[in-house]
Image 1 (cartoon, rainbow over the protein chains, first blue to last red):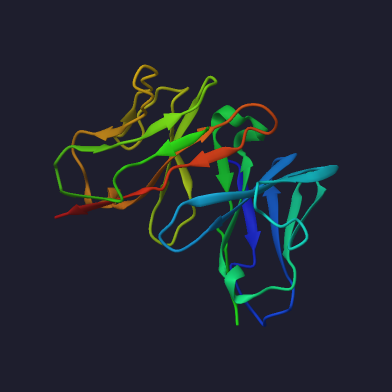
Image 2: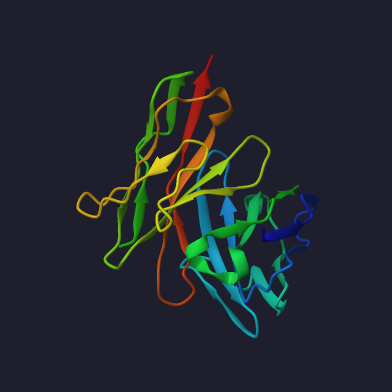
Length: 118
Length: 110
């Protein structure tokens, strides 16, 4: 089945620094990648949708300049948290339409990245 | 507005008991609904999609457009079913983003 590889799984950074999270689709091309944020014991909140070859679409209330998204190729999408602050600490998850990009077959999720900003 | 509601944060049952995890949605278009499961320390994975009308691990879910519901059911719960369950709605137009419910934690006791 389709697999999305997400790295790193955990990262601790100092306040004010930037952190990059990568998501790669293995064995399939992901023209679209969704980025979610999950707070402890809460649901996944969609932050943005990245699209290969075009600008990402951000959800209302998500700061574009803080959460930079780049969809460099059909198999790689990155989320960079810039000038991170403790309130950015969270679990970040990427997801791509699974099974060769066919939405009706569900979505494949990365294993998530736990970001802690100290 | 598009919304997915899972009214129960926690559902606690004994092994062998029937299980029903509730999910209601609000969407003006034609819905595509999914159930995702997250076992402890594992990634989110697809459990069911309404379009396929399949049974996975004994779970079934029927889309009821009249009641705007997509409840997840299993006649006899097993301890290994203990996990976090999320109902999700795929919104058409653009890039078919997923909107998740708050999730229900199912705890199956021996």
